[in-house]
Length: 362
Image 1 (cartoon, rainbow, N blue to C red):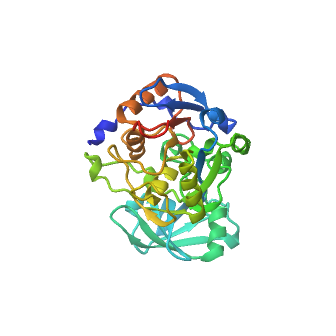
Image 2 (image 1 turned 180 degrees about the horizontal axis):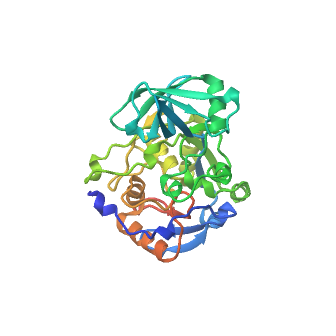
Image 3 (image 1 turned 90 degrees about the vertical axis):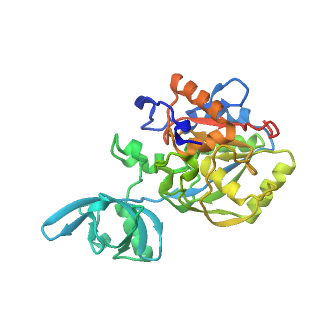
């Protein structure tokens, strides 16, 4: 399919710059292919799901991956924004930098120049390598726990570019851009469907007989990268590391065998579960990288219902939801959401999607 098939017009005012308060007050569009759309709220999940269903959450934790630094080369001073992507070893990371084109192998970037760092947190990094896709390997002057502490002191939440372009990150984002159940550090972007859950809502869901399980997929920058090809099949996904425990996989298989539905909270949880499932739909333990790319025509094996936010036009995530519920259904749902004032993207509202295939439970 052509990438143009996944395009739609989105007014700029529909982009949410702050989340709903409280989190579960966000709106929730219920999308059942072949049925009328329903306008609800996230807090209504206890009524929309049924006993025996299992919500699967991604418990990755966003690290303060956005660092502001300066490169000095003789009398030349350049302000640089560095985003941590993936740790290589005790002192080295793969990163993205702006303006990356003006950095050379061998350049030194110093951090903490804005006065936020104490002397013991002084941090430098040397550019060791640059790849054609824009990634840079940098070696920091600290290592291990000392490096982690310096990053925590100097870093900020790496807000999505469509928010960061319109306002600066602030102290509220440190909590707003993190799920209440985040546990395993490693993501550079939040699994945003999970941002809608409060501890109170999770307790109410448990009380209604709806179970919860946790998997881990460290969300990488690929979630923000635009699709630059004309044909969707030509796009190459960035790999992300994930883990599904053996006990979790077994409980999910038992729930489905008993008539319950696996409800993925977010596209990251869905992609990981699908990567962990075999051709017969059995979910297996998984620990490794996945670059699974889901487009219309994909046959879902592990996930029965999907809760997710509203995504960018022409994005891999809009392709995924179109694969799940049908392209025509999702275009109609998004048109309704825009007309009805739903809020889009990371801090926006959500939708509860049911599958296009009639043989899946609805």
